Figure (cartoon, one colour):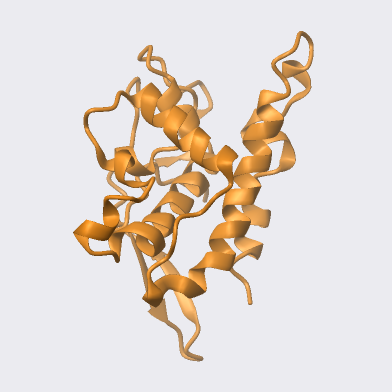
Length: 188
């Protein structure tokens, strides 16, 4: 059974410890989820789905009210933004949040395309903000995740020439962003 969650947020991602004390991720809040097979004939919704700070760049870029098909990589990108929020923003005091590049993602003053440009600039800059002391151990994971999406979006930008876009596999950003690659970052 393949499900697209479509609303990754801090509140919808949890963890538990298994019998061997290993951390196991748990997803919650499936009210916006769809079966992958439901999208075979196109997008299920004509609206952008998700919570703004965590929505994938490509979904934010579609300001014309005609969103692209929601893909697995959109959920993965949203997960990365949730982890980034937890490690590099949410744990800081309000005065320390003021200097974080993530702060603008929570602003309602920006249009969706402006937010997409801000996130793309963040990924292309490949410069993580500081993590809180309690979350510093997540920085190596975040570096790998940001690099993966950086490479994928960079490769997508390189296909903006006649004939090249047809050869680019947008579903997995040219092979840079796959579920297998994403999950391998979490295995110790």
